[in-house]
Length: 461
Ligand code: NAP
Image 1: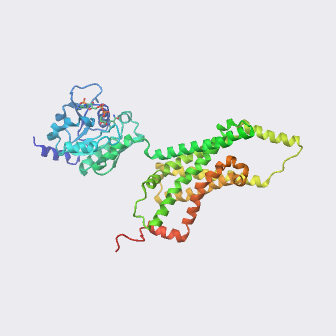
Image 2: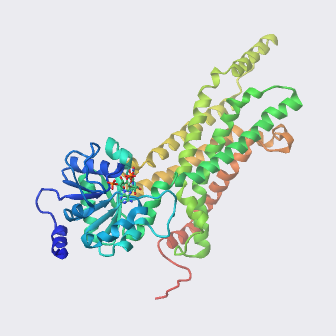
Image 3: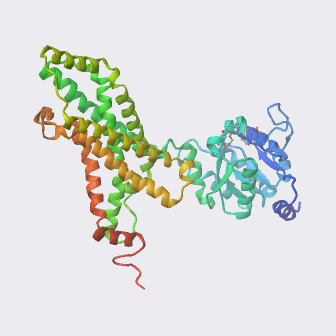
C-alpha cells in the first residue's frame, strides 16, 4: 500500500462542498451519538468495530467495517474507545500512519495516569497526528441535542493542520472549538469533566463555615442568653430573626472579601516595587474566586431582602406593635414622633436599597453574556468603582442600623460584641486601606508599578 500518497490526499484541503468521510473506532454510546450527529451534519461515517454486524442502534446511513478497512476510508479517525484498550491499535500502526487520530477519552479519576490519554496514544502511534477533542461533550447531550451548556469543545494537538481539520468538524456540528494549544494541554482538558465546581469550592466552604459560626453566635446571644437570664423563650427566632441577622452579615463580609485580595495585592506590589513577581498561591486562588464570592454574597443579600419584606406578616411583630399601642392607650399618652429615629430608619432603608441595587448590577455584569458585551474599561468601572460604592453603601447601611449597639453595655451579652459589630470589621478595614491607597503619594507609585516600572529592575538597560 502506498501510504504516503493516500495520506497526502487525505490531508489536502477540501475545496468542494462535499464533506469528507470520517471514521469512528468503537460503536459504543459515544461513537454512536457522535456518528449520528455527523451524519446529520452531512459527513459520511464509517465505523471501525470488532464486529461488522450492523445492529439497529447504529445510525442508519453509516457503514461498519473492520478497523483496518474503516481506517483506509478516512483521513480522520475518532477513537471512541477507552484508553485501557488502546493496545489493539498498535498492529494498525501502518494503516494509521499520517492519519489524524482524535482522542476523545476521559478517565475515572483526576491524574489517573502519569501522562494524558492523548499523549499516550501519540506515544503508541508516533506516525499519526493525535488531536484531543470532544471529551467534555456528553453522548447524551449529542444525541438529545441539548448542547446549550456545553457548546464549547476544547481542542489541542501538536499538528496545526490536523487540529484545524478537527476544528472544522467541530464547527460543522454547530459547536464552538476552543484551541487550547499543543498536546501538553491534554491533561488539563481531560481533567475538566472530573472537576466538581472547582472555582466554587473555597467560596462555598468559607460561606458554610462563616454561616454556621454566625448562626450559633446569634443563637447563643439571642435565644440561650435571654432564656437563661431573662426567662424568655425566643426559640422561634431560629426561623426568621436569626437568618435575617446572619444573611446581611454574610453578604457584607463576603462582599468585603471580594475586594480584600486586591488590597493585599496592591500592598505586596508596593512592598516589592514590581509587578513581575508571582503572588503567593493562596492570593492567586483567592483572586480567581472573587466572582463566586460576590455571587454568594448577592444570594445572601437577596435572602435578607426577602426576610425583611415578610417582617410585617410575623406574629411576633404584630404582637409587639399592638403591645406598644395598648401601653400608650393604658397610660393615656401618645409617644411623640422621634425625628432622629425616623431619620435613622429612613436613611438605613435608603442605603440598603441603593446598596442592593448596585449589588444586583455587579451580579448581572459578572454573567458571561453581559461581560462579553462590555469592554475591559467598562467592566472594571462596574466591578471596581461601583463595587466599592456598593461596599460603602452596605457598610453605611449596617453602621446606621447597628451603630446604636456599639456603645450600649447591654449589647455585650457574655462580654461578646453584637453580631453587627463583628460584621463591620472586615469591610471597614478594606475601606480604610483603600482610602489610603488612593492618596496620590501611594496611588502614583502603584500605578507606575502596574504599568511595568520596577524599583530595582533585574535587567537594567
Ligand atoms: P462504551 O459504550 O463502553 O463503548 C466503548 C466501545 O469501545 C465499545 O462499544 C467497543 O466498540 C469498543 N471496545 C471495547 N473494548 C474494546 C477492546 N478491547 N478493543 C477494541 N475496542 C473495544 O463507551 P463510551 O461511553 O462510548 O465511551 C467511549 C470513549 O468516549 C471513552 O474513552 C470515554 O471516556 C469517552 N467519552 C464518553 C462520553 C460519554 O458521554 N459516553 C463523553 C465523553 C467522552 P466495538 O464493539 O464497536 O468494537
